[in-house]
Each structure stands twice: as C-alpha cells, then as structure tokens.
Length: 408
Image (cartoon, rainbow, N blue to C red; front, top):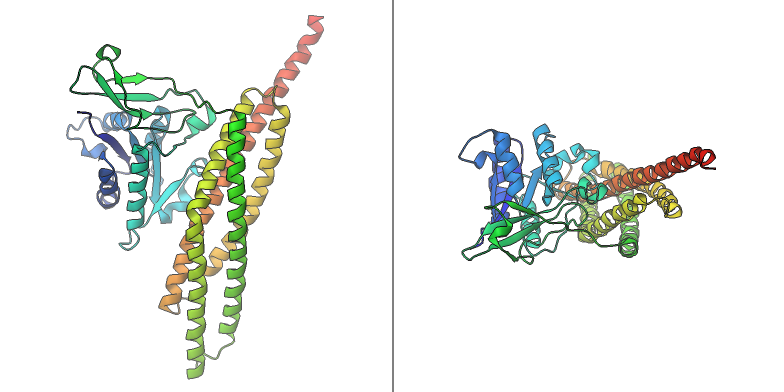
C-alpha cells in the first residue's frame, strides 16, 4: 500500500498555538487525506532542527503560521521554499500587517480564533488540501519566481507491496509551481532508488512568453471588470455612510423622537454596510483568482525577458513603465480604501446591528487590501527584475564598447 500524504506544520512552539493546530489545521487536512504533524509531535526527541528539516523534506504539503513574526518559523519557511515543497501561509487576522513585504505577493490565509469565525479557515484548508491532492492548485515561492531552474523538484517514493516503488507525490520547485500528488502516480524499479530516498527529477515550466501574455491578458480583463464594480460600490457606500452620519449628528438625542430617529439611522447604516460587505465577499474569490493569475504569470513573463535582455529590451522597458504605473494606481487605490476602512472602523458602537455590520465591512476591506498589497509587491518585484535586466544589458554594452578598440 502506498503511504498517506504528509502535511507538516511550521508554527511557534507556544501553548497558545496548540488549539490552532489541533482544532483548525489538523481536522481539515486529515479529512483531505493527509497525515498531519509538527516537530513537537515526534516521539524520538532529537535535535529539534533535525525533526524540522526531516519533517519538511518528507512533506507533501507545508503549512506555515506567520503569526508573531517568529524567527524560527521564517527560517523553516525558507527551507521549505528552497526544497520546493508546496507551502500554504496562514496567520491570525490581527497579524495581517506583520507579514513581511517579501511574502505579501503570496496569498496568506487569515484566521480568527473567535468560535463563530474559526470555521472559515477550516473550510479553506480543507479545500486547499483536496485541491492539492487532485493536482488542481499551483504554489509559488521566491525560489520558483525569481530563480527558475535553481532548485530541482523532488519526487518522494514510498514502497508498495509490489516489486517496484510507487511515487504518489510530485513536489515541484522552481518554475512549475504546481503538484499532482495522486494523478502523477507512477511505478519505478527498486534499482532506481536506495530505500525510501528522494528521486531528483527535472521538471520545467514549458510556458513561453506568449502563454504568459495570454494568461496576463485574461487575468487583467477579469481584474478590471471586478475593480470597476468594487470602485462603484465603494463610492456609493462612502457617500451613503457620510450622509447618514451627518443626519445622525443633526439629531437631538435627548428627546424620545430623537432617540427613535437615531435608531432608525443606525439600522439604515447597518443595512448599507451589510450590503457593501456582502458585495465585497462575493467578489473576493474571483478577485483573488485574478490577482493570482496576474502576479504569477507576470513574474514568469518578466523573468523570461530578463534572462535574455539583449533580445527583449523594448519589452523590458515596457514592463518597467507599466509596473511603475501599476505601482502608482495601487498606491492611490489603497489610500482611498484605507480611508474608508478607517472611517467605518471609527464608527461609534451605538447599536448591535450596526456594530456587526461595521466589523463585517472592516474584515471584508482588510481582505481586499491584502490583495492590493499583493499587487503592490508584484509591481515592485517586477520593477526590480526589469531594472536588473536593463542594468545587465547596459553593463554588457559598456564591456563591448571597451573591447571594441582592441578588437580593431
């Protein structure tokens, strides 16, 4: 029999994370078909780093909790990226601002330990686990995005009852950013491996510039459509909430009539905010999908250009211009959304219904702002890659100029 898929969890060694591990992470991944563990589950207590390194190396999936900005967690996350292990990033929603800039391009799933909202991360992890098993999800990392071909993906082979070895888990590293643990099963002879070691296999992302451009175009069209809808909704809710706030301030709350009118205005505010939050929540999955398409394909595109800058100077310069424009647009949009978010968050706690609607809207805006942060990170990384390519081209042209007199 083929052994079960393995998930390894990277998180701080702190009792406060025990419930996150046992209640929010283990159940959904177990139901998706994984055996889940973390370093302190290992009975043979050797050097903890040994357990961690082996746990990551043997894993088909890593879950890294970035809450508290723990140095050990980030070191271990770097190991997972370097080994090419598919990795899911999670963090408590209150730690959203603590996720380092270099990782903001990569989707982080935020969780809440409040019992009514904790279910959300359970559903997300279960879906991610099942999608990973089915080979329907792609994983990115700085290694695969910026050093294509630098890290070799690994195939974990486990013994079957037959004469050969079954390979159930393709862990891809640079370039490919996908995995097919079940669909990619294959038989190899025992002579191909010693024991249960890892078989290094060269897998390359065979997409070319045209493929990336088509993907970017499709993602951009989707993003533009959703963005227009979100902008219109944001403008409406901003105007409505401002109008209601002005009417509320004009009341005389000491009178019975004033109190009745105040409650009516607060209920109207709750209705407006609930409708806005519902709209954001309904658009969020497609918006995230568009952002993922653009950021992953965009970095693949500019990376290919930068590898041979002498052939693609015009295209690299165009990327540099469009990325700088995108950077400016995102900065402006983020500022406007932050203003609305802070304005809604600052509404006084007057009524249960309006309080709930306020908090729901703030959470929805935080999720949207996280996606804008990913786009901003992508734009800045694209600028860096394009500038590096042009700098390399300039250095080569300078060398050629210096060598020309001697050649003649």
